[in-house]
Image 1: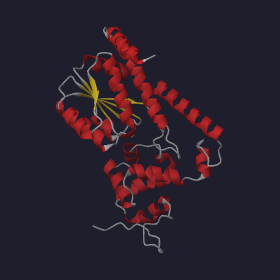
Image 2: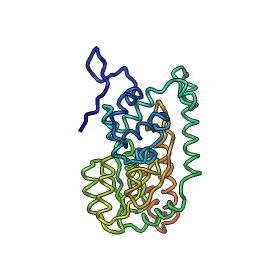
Image 3: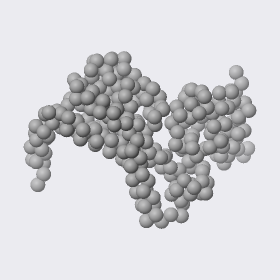
Image 4: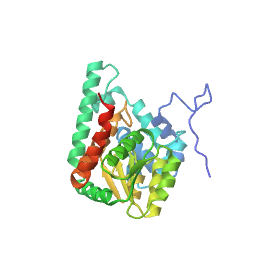
Amino acid sequence: MSETLIPTDASSGNPAAEVSIRERLRSVLPALSPAERRVGDAVLRDPLAVIHLSVSELAAIAETSPATVVRLCVSLGLRGYHELKITLATESSSSERQALGEIAPGDDTAQIMAKVMEGTARAVTFAAENIDSAVLDTIVGHVLGARRVLFGAVGTSAPLALDAAYRLNQLGIDASFAPDVHTQRVTARMLRPGDVLFAISHSGSTFETLATARSAQASGATTIALTSFSRSPLTEVVDLSLVAGSEETAYRVEAMVSRVVHLTVLDALFVALTLRSPTSRAHLALTEDVLVEHRL
């Protein structure tokens, strides 16, 4: 098997820090396999668009598999697809960022605040207009009928899962979230048919969350995902997907706005469960009775 060579900086012998990822890709393109070359061509054709794509979406455009996309990234000396997106975003020019309405290096604090707020508002509005309400209604039914609900998430999605589990418990629903990923996976395997695994992942391609979802699937539980991309390894595994995306920007790949959007969707789910559950008012009253002791 031929070995893909990564251009190096002649003075240091290290992978060329001064060579852009696009130039590196152009230089190795002829030595790549046909499938990897299609991925490379797609990246070079519209590198800024790649910032907004999941690994599955880029693979579909290149008519190949997510594994091939990851292999290309490794061939470029990167640790994976996420690093490719970050690198493309970082290396994008000021004119390219401005064309996308992106925050510019010269923006003052007021401009940054306005752009961040406007971007967040657009993302929440877009989610409200495009989320599948029929899927949300089906999920409400599964959660209300479940013996137990387990949340699966890591990284920046973990606080959302912890909050969601707590709020479902306020309604009398047996819900839990374990921060440790090994515990998540083992607990998911102990679920039963009729139980629910609710995975939260912005990218839908996090190894640990995928493993937890697959464990729950093997147990016969209903698997649900809240994610930002309609096509991802996670959406291909679970039974039901709530897709609520947000644009990733050059300065904020996996920006906090994705968490704001997901938190809003979880809030809508909580309200829907409250209205549908005949015992929710009684359980919420018990919650308030406890919390009043902790307030002045």
